[in-house]
Length: 316
Image (cartoon, rainbow, N blue to C red):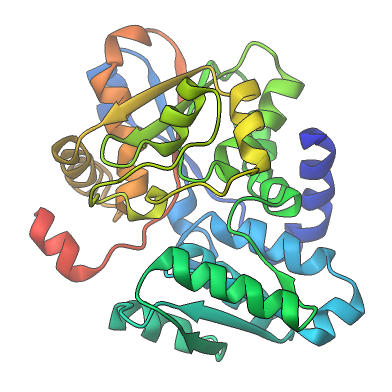
């Protein structure tokens, strides 16, 4: 996959449909870590997450016939919101499958987009497998949250913005679940500037990509509950993101749940911004390993801000 080519194509397609999110300097983190820290605020993106980029790019890349047949996806989180927003914006048909035990807050958030919601099973993997079967049966496009070149290209448009916003970038920190975000950003930035280093950040309770890279293949493993629900879960076997992470991610940092909690509170206290667990992972990762990055220009990708009020209350 030519990541740079996919990202530049996505940039042309989606620019008028998405926000160029701010890159905000953090005086507190810069002082704490003895480096220059910048926050890429994707929590201010449409739908509250970077996922709006990839979803929009995917739907825009479809043929007229594919759009008319309608698309299918399965997600309980930011990917579902991204797809719902793209379908509504472009006036396309689509169905989003959710587990039957999905939270009311997530279901209600999707209802604002008037998208077709269907429910199957109580496990995310079962729901996704069922949605794929329906898509294949009906000859419809299934939109993966990460294992798709158009999704990766869309997420990589963050890298295009970063190059325009900051003259010198030494390190970019991004959270990893399936790897779509870091594959797009890292793939683009390292192809336009080989000096940039990319750091993958994961919750210790769900380090699937990290363990897979160590094992040399995508592995199945038991994961524990984590505040970083946006990065939790397994990786589809054969996913193109595995090879891209091997190629473009320079190092990995794992953080525990308490470190994620502290990071969420820190950003709320010092920047007055609400961020979700997956975004807290990048902040926590820099703080944990801060001595390695002195005097460098650091970008932390704040991937989203979709955290429930109840969860935020518990953290505080």
